[in-house]
Image (cartoon, rainbow, N blue to C red):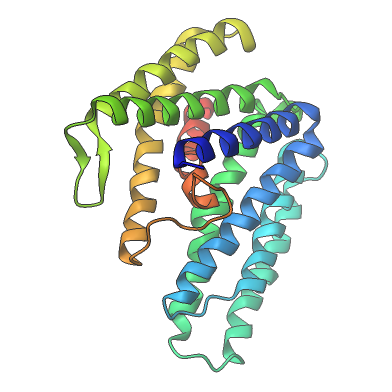
Length: 270
């Protein structure tokens, strides 16, 4: 099976799983976000453990899950914002536990334990907040994250196929030699077109708002992709994992989402 066939099959199955989870209910959406969070974070910790560091996997996953779930409870209105205070003792416990591990470079281990949460869990919390926007309502609106995913997929697919067909000028050769300006522009056109369709037929909203959201996804999602590529290059890796045949790992698949969600949330709030 060639790479394109693998990519198509994996992408199709993943897209169906995501759409079903987003559309079924708020609970299935949160379970999807929790799965993406923990699998991506576990992948992140494994990469740096293989590089000679010792981030606290179990403690980091515990803090990540408590952060995401407490944030969701606060955003959805099921609990007040005070529920998020539970993360303070959990985070402090990571520092205390490091005292007893007797590992070399303890503060590097702590740094990478918290870096994974900063780069993965917090962006997903922003994405969950987008799904419950406006926040005061406490209502889950599945069309918003669904439209968001459609734009992401259009951008990624357009960039992949346009880059394969006409890519000639590297976008950031030092970090990611295969990414080209032609592919990025193709992905941008596809994303903007899908954003217009989303505003017209999925959410019945102002087209300008969704075109701006698409531009934010294009720009910040591309930088999220490049940052992930820089991480892999620093570790001498091609892919962050193998869980998704044809796509690599969880970080390979969701880097654009992690890079763009905080900025889209800020735009909606402002």
